[in-house]
Structures are given as structure tokens and as C-alpha cells.
Length: 208
Picture (cartoon, rainbow, N blue to C red):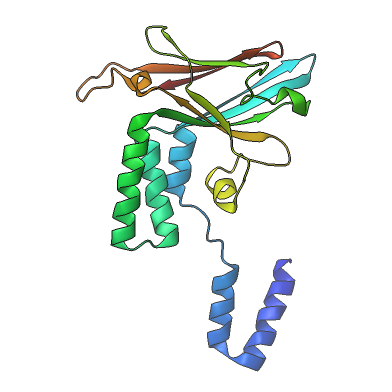
């Protein structure tokens, strides 16, 4: 709907229903999307890389590190949108803290031209996935899980997810993967998430 048509529609509504209904209509058509603060945090903790061969895409991966800063921003935005009461907010917050302390988790979205190559969660996957800490120690995942049900919550909070184009996964590592991050420690800690196969290698890096 272009601006002229929208203006004419509003004028008709004014003539037949009064101004109060116009205000409600305008409120409905407003964009009530995510806050700039959440999107900035998502961008801060998301990395992406595409591997090409002879100008053709072999694989594209976008991954978000679900560390403390991101989890707090996500929960704050979720609470704002759903206007959670204090009791439910506290219960969900406690559950999130407990779950996040059990693992180091990433969410990643992968696209490959051949769908059979997008098999990260399978036991005999063509991909090897692991984490490298700042000392170069290799850490293997405890779980790679395909997220089958792509809900509106997922596609809104993670705008890079397109269920008709690629696949969304959760990957978890032991909590020791976050070791070394201490209060007052000014030295940057680095984590590298590695995906490697015959299609190519993707290396995503985070500084903590």
C-alpha cells in the first residue's frame, strides 16, 4: 500500500468513524519491531562467513554466541515485548541463568546449495565442528541439534534465519570453553568456532 492510498483510507475513516478510530488504526500499522539496543547486541555477538569456489557459494554460516551479555539482552527484549509480570520474569530469568551455566552455546544458521550437505547434526555428518580457545586447545561439542520448528519468535529475534533457504542449529560445548574470563582481567580471551569439510572451512572468532 503506497502513501497516497493509505492517506485516502485514513480520510475515509475520519469521515465515517471519527478521530479515535484513526488513532487506533495508525497504532496497528506501526512497526513494532525489535529495539535498536537488542539488534546492536545481536550484531555484536554474531559472526558470518561464506566460502566460495569458482564464484559459486559452497557454504554460508552465521552464528551467534549465547554468552552472558547476549542472553541478558535477549531476555530483556523478550520481557519488554511480552510484558511479563515480575513473578514470571524472575522464574524465567533464574531458569536461563541455570541453563547458560551448564554449557557454552552457539546458535548457527547454515546454507549449502545441496541440502544433503547441510547435515551438521547427523552422526555421520560431512562436517567436523569444534571450538578453539585462546591457547589453541580444541574442544569438541557435546551436542549439535537441528532446530526443526522455526517459530515467529526465532525469525524475529534472529532475522538471518530463513527456514526455506537454510537450516538452524544449536551447538553446545562444555562450560570450560569459557574458562579464563575473570573479573578485572583486561586481557582479551578468544574463541574460534571452526567448521570444516570437503566443501571448505569456516572460522568464526569472538573476543571476550
